[in-house]
Image (cartoon, rainbow, N blue to C red; front, top):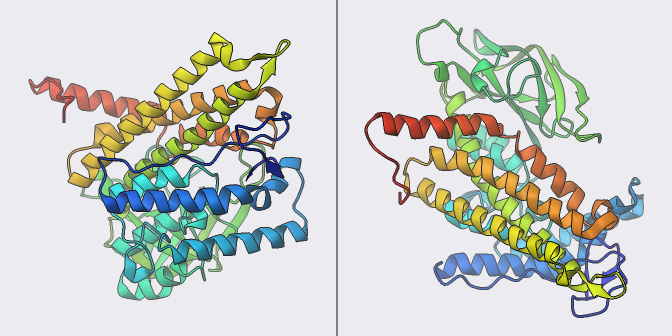
Length: 442
């Protein structure tokens, strides 16, 4: 028996359904012949935990959402116990924190290995956090790992990786284009051995729970010598520092969120709180976003995979108009074909881009391509799954609502579609103006 968003036990696909709270069969993951044994073992081990420990407990982990109410104390306690159990299983299987090196308690996976793991993790919404990958902590951990000093590792990174601290990322501003980090107006000025920070941010992720924020600041005047990208610095700011004023959690899709609006009013922190050299903030952000776009896209592939399974299951089992099956309808057959093509094309584009990134090739055009294509494909795949499920598709009995919102949000997050389309066109035109055509084989 398989359980899930139905809030109870659901029969496997071969059994008769009553149409209430159906869910997908376990994720079908087999060894990929072109991948090495290590990657296949990671994928198979991850799928085993997803199928045996997470899918059967989704009703406990997230089932309270299906009635639209607040969870009771009993539900919160039960969910916390299940989370702890699953996390212990993950750690025993040595699948914890794939993004971190072993000396910080992680798996030490390569870029490609992590990408292949992500598509399996994302089959169940929220599963990544059960494997120690929690945004924005995971991205902040990578930045601290690369740019942090030993003192910063001891004070911030290690407690963060051990779960004794939470973090936030504070970059976007309400009055400046989020798609252009160089337009940031939050200023940090050195006063002796302290940075004095003044500025207005919003969508600071994990703002309420964070013990510290990584804040993107302008540390040079726009007219100062140097390139436009060398005027930003990322600085660690503890949440309880005087002058850190949390205005609100910004509602997202009509619901409360921990993405906070914050005003930094003469906030003073030690100069030693800056990450990397002065002026490296833009590069650090690009390091974070470039890899993050790959992971987001592979997460989207995993979510599409779940949508596809649920949709095909529904099409095979749902009877309409006097006993006819949806699978006999050409409209529904078209939905299957279109979603299959969206998923396969997305997956292959992301894998190709990740390979180029790992090999050190110029992957800028490919990153922009997947950033535009995959969220749009994800949006289409979820939309078809909702349509096939009818009213149930927009209910809390299935994970589609969160996926739909997530897919739409990804068309804005980490750079809007329009910016990436412009970058693709500029990169292509630059090559043709240089007298060279595009080589689609590289």
